[in-house]
Length: 371
Image (cartoon, one colour):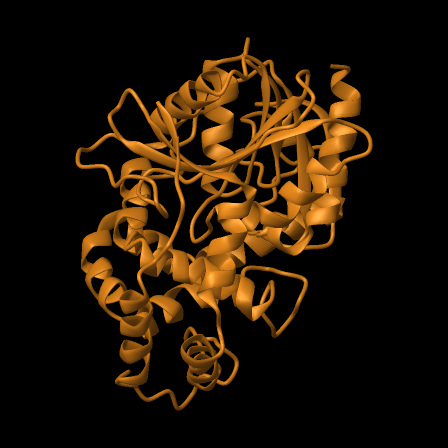
């Protein structure tokens, strides 16, 4: 069952957020000018001051509602909140976008508008919130990993009347999208990824790998030693972290904004997007009280929640050079049926940072699918 869902956070909750920000108890931060120890305190003070005094949540709310905000009750008896922009043309091409952590459906607001106004194709866009994220329901039992979510996403698409569709994702969205392609190859007509997960083949893994690709691998190895701590905490003890992030806006923003500042974006020493865009994502976690439940996906998935089975679904890799994990194309070909592989400037949050490029890459991919 699908029903319209209008987001309207009570004014009392907005005022409570502002009060909590104004009553923040600050730690010291004497040696962190370059963010090497985490989020810089001076930056965060300015960020929170803007959140409390200038940021307008109502604008963010209205953007989601205007695109089409709905709730779907799945067979797993969990509510799925999603954005749906249906083409006026009956024979449209549906694209299912899936976000990751610490992302949200708001990453896709810009690319939804771009693709909805495409002059080449008639697209219908579906952007669901992963269970435990945003205004989707919070799982009350174990087992809601990427594979199970893939089944729910397919159920949603069929309920919307889309028997054939393209899937797109990065971060956890990449694992969920890959599972859909593996589980439902007759329905999934294309897999488009802006984060491609692959491991080295057993035989001659570095034969034919270029110097540029090796450099990108070195970046990942550096990241694993200097930036992977959050993953291990969220994979092992998410509840311990969840208490502080749920109770404190400063704690929540400090934990999340570091990722939007440092996750290999093209905007060195700045945020990957505007302050309002990043705050809208953080605010969604806050007002939906979903940060703790969102962390549990790491526990459910363990090491990536990924299947390395070879798939037949045509696949595109839209590679952004400052992303976290970028395997050589040769490695990806061991798992995916690659028909497109392009490399661009940009980072982890491609739909947020480079929506025009990602949209064009999707259109080029559809050209090759010959739908």
